[in-house]
Length: 59
Image (cartoon, rainbow, N blue to C red; front, side, top):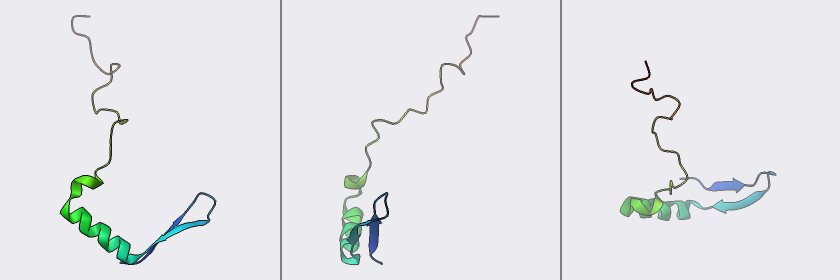
């Protein structure tokens, strides 16, 4: 793996993640992938919206 350079919005270098740190993170992810799951509390459910549902008995 190669080192990763992280920049901010203005283009300034914030930090450099070494290949050794990436290897450690990779091993942690293989051993326990649950610690890297993202929190999805704010996401919208994949349910149909109320506008697209058809009311029965309105004919």
